[in-house]
Length: 263
Ligand code: SAH
Figure (tube, rainbow, N blue to C red):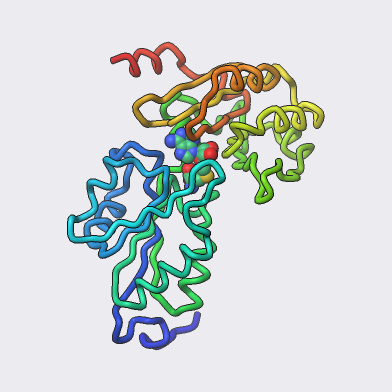
């Protein structure tokens, strides 16, 4: 382990720092205490489009809020510009909180922001957040792993950087027999399902799409891998949607979950 002097770590005269904070899936109750503390000491907060206004209410009035949000592929601010802005504000002496949906390191580009901060010598901390797969599973009472049914959990994206479905190892995914949590797969689900079925996964495998997990207006669509794509297209989920695929989805307590929503 190497020890570097404070000045080299960027803790010199400017005292600026950055914290990458996972905001969780939307419900403020699912923020960590550490996330709340970080927000309370922020001078500047850069936040995404998926951040719920109730969470922004926790930002002190004196702090500046900057919306760097991206909506459905339309980037309000390029990732490189966000990276530069965090560094610039921190070097000017601010405590910059980069508030990100879910967990910063699960399909959140947290790694790219971390690289820029490290390169500029800005001290950085990371606060984990409840990722969408965990929030959706909790809401629907689906155990993501199960000793008898699912021995592995696979987080996959349905949306590559060029907008098409990424070239996952579909055969390995189908053969693993675990639970698949597909992020950003709302629009590409027909292709994702087709590839998994072609790779040997049964079309009858239980699957569910959850829109706005943990938020008011959460919607869910239970089906099978074979039938979910068409049903989802019909239902027209336009908000952030997570798809869970695997035998464990069959354990969901649909009725109880719906009662809770109605309460
Ligand atoms: N870092 C985030 C993921 C960002 S990628 C996390 O850890 O959750 C954005 C994708 O996350 C969305 O397209 C959707 O698939 C999923 N997502 C984020 N919030 C969600 C929510 N409240 N409900 C359902 N899916 C969500």
